[in-house]
Length: 365
Image (tube, helix red, strand yellow):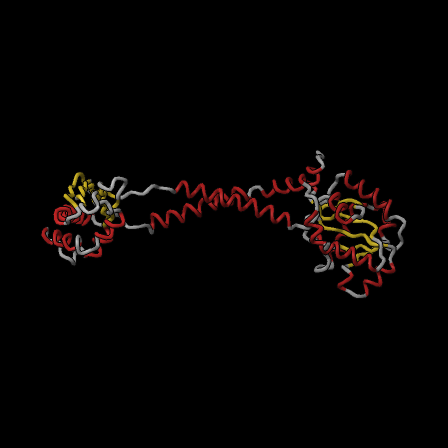
């Protein structure tokens, strides 16, 4: 099993995870706000700013009395909504509609046949004897003109077609502005929920792929090495962590004569090892000067071939791992290289840690 797979299979330290999540919790409401603004803005642009032109509509209800089909022994009943919509554009009805429009002074240039076809919709709600005709047009005047012309044409069709005894107009609504339900609020809520959920999933995914360590115990579980203590990113006067580090240093390092300190993130910046050694000396103070003088800072051996000889000649290595920095895989690689060269890892120090985070983690007031 490779190192990356081991990191993915590690048991999640929930306390550490939630404490870190609290610092990022602002991302979720921010994402929800952005989602609400984005979806609300898109809905407004599509349906209001660049929405469909204002249109007007009328509804006409016509009662159909079908003729008796002597051959079938029943009334004609094969006219459905599809049939009526098809008839509106045929020579049986459309020419009559255009004639009716011309009678009231409307030419084909003003209202074309195609405009009539596009404006008219026929429906059979339930009873085949009830025909509902809806006329929708961008002009209120044209809507009324087309409605009157189509109603008259349908009544005439009932008088001339042998499939009907009659078609009568029983109701007609006045032309009215077509209104649409404002779903801006729904779009805003949808956007907020969608982006909030997406933000949560992204945070979980990022944490799942995070191979960094934040607390000493996680470091010990992963690398199976003793963690001597922690060094903070900022100067700390807290004796608790200093005493832990000093006690562990005296136990694991004091007897070694030639010690090398390697920062696991020194692959790109060789100065990181030196900075970590300076921080260690400053934290432990003058009481351990004689022992700390035996420690030499070194960048990752792979950068300089001669470093492999130096670590081979040393009594062991102190490995510093920056807290919260994604170099977990590199740390595992360094440990593997040191084992190949039979160089013992005397201990690990978690460096550049967040003191406030660790105090919250350990509930130290």
